[in-house]
Image (cartoon, rainbow over all chains, first blue to last red; front, side, top):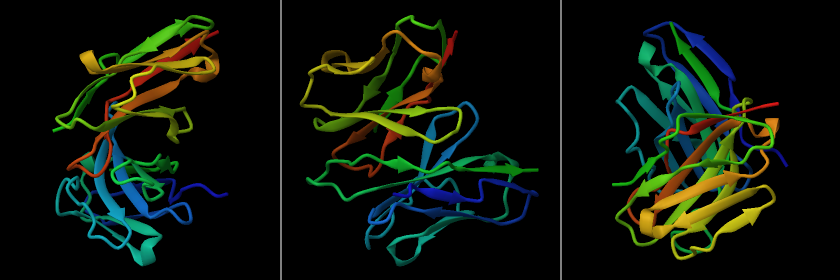
Length: 118
Length: 115
């Protein structure tokens, strides 16, 4: 079956412009995650969606970042007024609902969107 | 608070050598889960293993093995007889049972295996 897909694969934008990054999770996965990977850094958690629950936005670095998930499937991460420090690879992951309370299932990652802000 | 430390930024080995990637974690949870992911040059993270804090048995999968030591809060990963295809960035990650809803990742160790 299809894995997690992300578009675009690469995005170059000018400082101050808004960008939208898209994630299509694996069908049937109720959990969706956005991470940011800067050069030489680990994965920085941004936001987490689980079913119809309110998203966990605790990782968003500023109010310029927002995300939504429509119909419990596709998600869009929006960065407004981009800055050069926003340049990074943005990774999306999805997973099934845990079988037992609290047991985290394996997260399946997409190929990422490489964002470059000039 | 949760924290994962991968002290080795980069490791270079020659094919067929054994190599161990270190991972040390911190968590206040008594129940937690540890993961290893591989990120090859293509960029897509690949899940390797998940262990829970109650299971300290070491695990072996082919050339891969994992050593979980609760006493030292470590979850090290060993590749036996390394191959060029093992070249990748390897991430260790942690999720506690409470609080934070997703994984905390270490900064990764880049493994370069030369022929």
